[in-house]
Length: 324
Ligand SMILES: [Zn+2]
Image 1: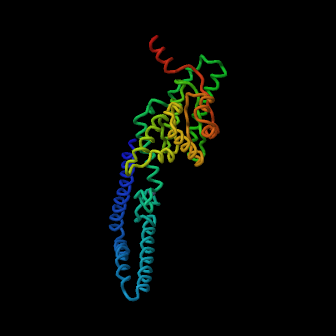
Image 2: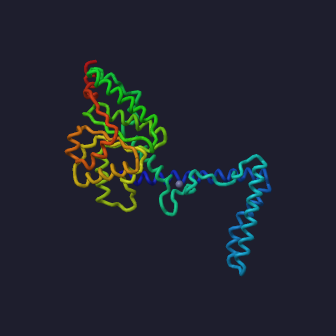
Image 3: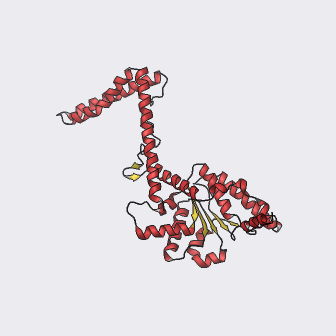
């Protein structure tokens, strides 16, 4: 995948945040020094305390001197904050306001990727995905129930209900409580359009969404697995970590023991972590059962199942265009 690029871009954005936070802190400091000159001296005392502690550590009564320096620091800090509050500023106005308090916008906590880095990787990955998919063309507003009007009433009503359910799912989406959806039905019945419409709304809310065909994703996983490039983050971890995973065309991927075990890993991990998925397939329940066996499917069928009806919309569209 473009995985390394995504990683680099996420790191770049987090570093940019850190620089921005530091430069804002410097601007605030300049302003406060000019407005409340006493703060400059207090700040200087605080800054020089580190050096003083280092020097004190080498002296004979190190412990006493360090305790003394710490006491002076606490007092200087208290006075500084008091001065700020007196002048109408928040007490922490001179602190660097990092976006992520866990890692101070470095992206790492004790050498491990911070939550904010993982989140950013998900967002950048999602953006890349948008660039390559028809996301911009698909929205709920562009979805027309007219194409289902020729269906028997009860089937039309089912499609109407699916449309409403998808809108509700997207509008109420949060990664902890959203459930899974399994969309079943032939080609061109609107599964992709509706799942991309959901993706657009969920992305808009700031969550990470990965959308791709099962075939593409499994192919990437396989390439990574057998080439094992150094330093590349796994596509797999991205698939497991994103807030919403949408697997299109499930069942058309190349069927090997590797792809099977990967599918099981993905379904199992996401379901165990209660992370939502939308899975689309052209296969019916029986064919799914035959192809994957009950081990994978028992987990999949606990999802909300949407059975699509209709006639191939792409075909209907092109017929209409030819007639007009
Ligand atoms: Zn962080």
